Every structure is written in structure tokens, then in C-alpha cells.
Image (cartoon, rainbow, N blue to C red; front, side, top):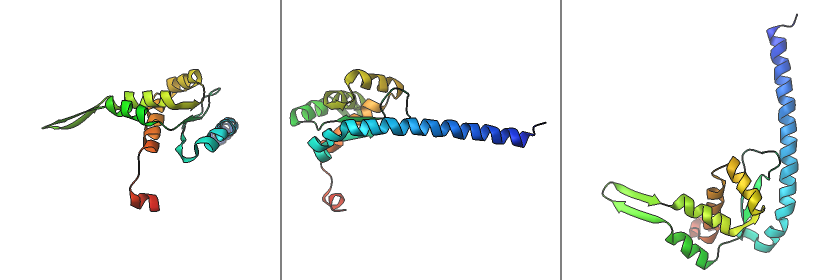
Length: 147
């Protein structure tokens, strides 16, 4: 007769085996992604915006990369965000949508249809990548740049 402690240990071992297989699958995908974006890193250097999914979805990349936005695209991006200052505080409208559009406009990896499938699984991905593109286009304080 198996005790509860033994059953628990079996369960933990089975879970650890599954976790190890998932980690290996993620590592394999991340390696493929890194190899695919390496030429982009060479081309854009620090200007390449890259985000990493927290979760690996089978058959999908875990990395997404976007080229730097040019001045005209950044002007359109900023123009699509509305800031309203009122007595009760400031509200910002359209920033998530603007970031998503910026990401899609600058996307270099993966292909747009694959990126769309990634965004279905991780709905915040496009906005996050767009925010990274905007950060690359911005400056940082002199003190931050020195450190």
C-alpha cells in the first residue's frame, strides 16, 4: 500500500519531469529566436527593441524584435495619444493602441502573422514591444546614461 507521502513524492517527481521538458522546449525555441534576430542585432545595435514572453506557447517564438522608429513614425505615434488635464487629474487616452501600432509598424521578428498569434496568447505583447520601441527612440537622463 502506498502512503500519501509516497504518492506526493511521485506527483512532485512527475511535475518536475514535465517542468524540465517545458524548460528544454523553451530553451530550444529561445535559441532559434536568438539565432534569427542576431543579424538584426548586428544591423540595429542598441536600437533594436526586443521583448521576451514570460510563458512559452508551443509552436510560437518567445522573442519579438522591432527596429527603431524614425522621426515621422514617432510624430504619428505621439499625435495618436491624447492627454487630458482636468481638475480631477490627468488622463491619457489611446496610449496602448498607439504602442501596439508602433510595434506592428516596426516589427522585424517574427513574421506579422506569427506575431498576431503570439498576441492572441499574450494580449499585452504588442503594447509592450511598442513601449520598448518608444524607449529606444527617446533619450535618458545624463546621469542614467553614465551608470
